[in-house]
Amino acid sequence: MKASSPTPVVSCRGVTKVYSQGRSEVYALRGADIDIYPGQMTVLVGPSGCGKTTLLSIIAGILALTDGECRVMGHDLSEMTDREKTRFRRRAIGFVFQQYNLLPALTAAENAAVPLIVAGTSRSQAVAAGRARLEQLNMSPRAESLPTRLSGGEQQRVAIARALIHEPGLIVCDEPTSALDAKTGRATMELLRNVAVQPDRAVVVVTHDPRVLPFADRIVTLEDGQVTGEQEPPEHHDEHSH
Picture (cartoon, rainbow, N blue to C red):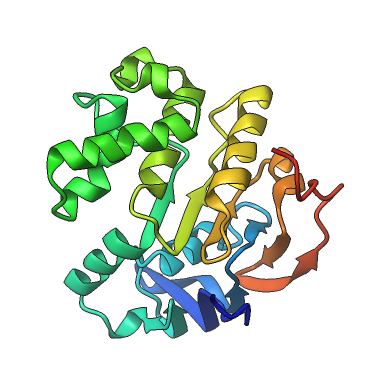
């Protein structure tokens, strides 16, 4: 049995990101502090340009910070080489993007299997695991379809299957509903809520979409490159709804 002591999956202290533009410096983050816990969906909100996506990219090890510290599952990302970061991301993090980033020549099951194939699992085993994940997301009938034959909502389900396939400890989602209509966006968030959020996994979502907020456990507000507070999720989702 795992102890339920909530050790944060992500812990950021004083995270600063400065971009040089000619002679001037642009601060995307100005000393952001945040802890993100397992078993929760944490949603980052705030005005455009407030640093949400920059913070998500630093947490995901895609972007290097300028100053401060960001630890993910106990690892200090700034102490890793690029190669170590890539390996760590492949093993420990799942990604869900606004653009689904599916490979057009691969079937849904093959797309879902990509993280396992990259990690060295045999192709047949990986694709079988991809099919099993798609079944969990009610996508079995579409498992052999190419992305061009899938609707936006179906493509996003394949992306979610791909994010979950290697059982990562952290899933990061950048605007996962923004390309979807209202009904499909809601269905996508229900899936993420029910399938991705696990006692030993944290889910972080960056969004402008107010429809996402009822699915959150925590809503963290950013303004001008800093975490400015938390707000209660509206009409909190029923813990037992499926």
